[in-house]
Length: 129
Image 1: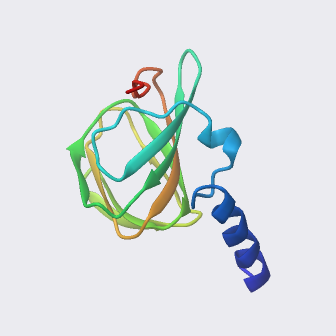
Image 2: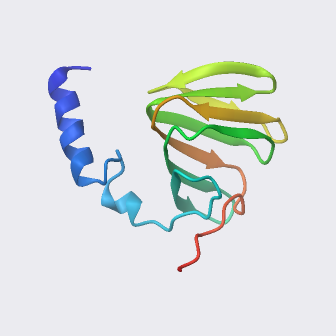
């Protein structure tokens, strides 16, 4: 990536609360998630959910399983274990987690990912407080 392009992206991120996500995404409903340092904006239809995640390097998401999940790393670096196989994912890498397969993740830097879930009820909308 050229320096000029990096500078352009950094300038945009300053205006977007430090994320690569513009207002049209950050104005989506936020998900209710128990991990400190994780934010997600929810886009959904009757059968699927897409979540635009902003994840601080907070530690590890423990092993768990759920519906099928496809994701892509927008920025940052994370370690992802799927079915016992661990890989490091960084900008541009995508992954697929089949339904019911145990997986976990740790975040080596601040990470921005887009995850698509094969269920409409994976995440709930955060309640207004």
